[in-house]
Image (tube, rainbow, N blue to C red; front, top):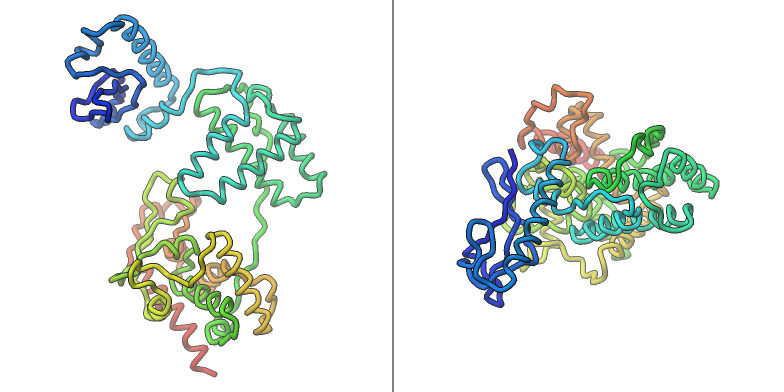
Length: 402
C-alpha cells in the first residue's frame, strides 16, 4: 500500500546551502520524492515531519500540511495504485491537479506536447500541435474539457470530412483528440458520465501496399547511381532491409563500434510501453559491409556528410530512393520509399515461411493480443538470426541467378 509523508534528505544539499523539503512516496518497498518549494537551512530544523526553530515555522507547517493533504487526496483518486511502480506513481501524482471544470483542452494539449518534445518525439509533438489547431478552429477557440461531449466529437469528425480531409487523416486527428481527453480523465481534471468518444470507433486502417518484390530489392542493391543522394538512399534502404526493417531514426542512433550484435528499443515505443521491447539480433555480413563504408570511426555512428536536421535528412533520403526507383523503372516506383524496406522484409519472410511472431520480434512490433499463447513465448536472438539468414540468402540468390 502506498504511503505519503514529508521528508528531508540530509545528503542532498542545494547550491545555496539549504535543504528542500520533499513529498516522499513509498510504494512496493521503494521511495521516490517530489521536491517542494519549501526549504530549511539545516536538517536540524526539520524534525518529525515538521519545521522547527526558524521564524515563520508555524505558517510553513500549515502550508506543508495542506500540500501533503492535497497529495493524499490525489492518491485516493488513483483507481488501482498497485498497477504502477513507485516511480510511475510518483510521476502520476505530480502530474495530477485538483479536479476542476476550469481545465481546458489546450492546457492539457500543450502540457503533453511539451513532454513529447522533452522526450525527443518532435514529429509526434508536431502532429499533436496540428490536431490542436484543427480542433480549436472547429470549436472557435479553446474550450473547457467539461464542455466536450459525444455531440462535440461527432460534429468534429463531420467538420473534418467536409473540409475534404481523407478518412485516414481525419481518423488520426480524432485519435489525437481522444488521447488528450483520456489524459485529462487520468489526471482527474474532468469526469464524464458518458465518455465523449463512447460512440466513435476508429475505422480500420487501410493497408498500405509499400512492399516490393525480392527482385526489385535486388535491383536497388545492385544499382550504381550517379547522384550521391541516390547512393546514400540505396545503402540506407538496404541497411534497413538487412537489419530487420529498422527505422531511420533508430538506425542513425546506433553506435556500431566493436558491435557484432545489435540491441535497441524502438524510438517510437520506448516512451509508451511499460515493458522492455528490446530487439536483439546478430549483424549480418551484408549489413556490416555497408556500416563499415559509412561509419564515423570516432563516434561509431553513420555519417553521410549531411549537416541539416533529421527531418530534412529523411526528406533527402526519401527523394533519393524515389529517384532511384524511377531510374530503375521499378513497377509502382511512386510508392517506393524508405519504409518499403521494412514492409518488404516482413513480406519476404512471411512468403518464405517465417512465423509472424519471429518477424514481429525482428521489427520490434508488439505481439498481437488476439494470439495470447505467444505472450508466453520468449523468442530468442537465435530465432531472429535464423530468420534473417533465410531472408538474406534468398535475396542473395537473385543476384547469382542472373
